[in-house]
Image (cartoon, rainbow, N blue to C red):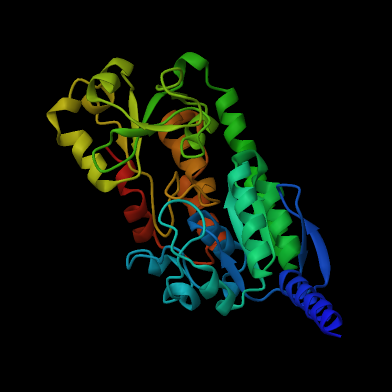
Length: 347
């Protein structure tokens, strides 16, 4: 009898565990990593695993956000819908500074977890492990530029907002088409040689293939560190290296870095500094070039095209930005807003 009871207890334990790990759901989806994920029929509560996913979720369905991994700054809030401006900080599952623990995640009761970005084995293993531990469906969406239209449609299908996804995806395709048309009209010799300055002093940068510098190559520019750093990686470099690379243009995402590059004497020999071609693309409400590398980079493409190629980029950048902010961020921007957003693109 005792043996029977013990076996029954084990069976009940297994049933309870399986029931916890694989909750009842309405449908199966295939994410960008090829994982088959069982998701609820109706999804209203979504947890974003990292900052890029924060933005991706806001753009697609802000009303389903539980909070922010990286809450907006005060200067960002006017460019966001009121319903998300004061959402709490939740912490992240991916990248550096992980702060979300499993117990708290379970207590939040999200319908799904979404991550948006790289599709390597590290992120796939994390998704599988967290899903097994929590029973919460975890979907991975490809955050690379080439995948953007398909990723928007995939996430829209998962959330059952196909019209929204299609509008966003079509706009992404139109931006890519215009970028390609402009690049095709510019001879290789006329394309800018760009150094991407990260960090407060500007001496952190990325090699070709890095998701952080992907936008530089996508607009046809030459990343001056190509061939000098491991492909796809980030590294700190020296002033001597930057001087030897002799970029004619510097792009940064940090106000302090721009100030350092323009004012620190060790940068003076660099052609881009001599010509004051040190560009700070808009970062409100989200980075248009990086930090984090998310779907917000789409508007960075026409911004950089306009800065790099002048006459070849004949589209009205301000009209394009106004349209993008209305569709993606659901916010109207004024002429004064645009002046402020584009201030860092001026010499």
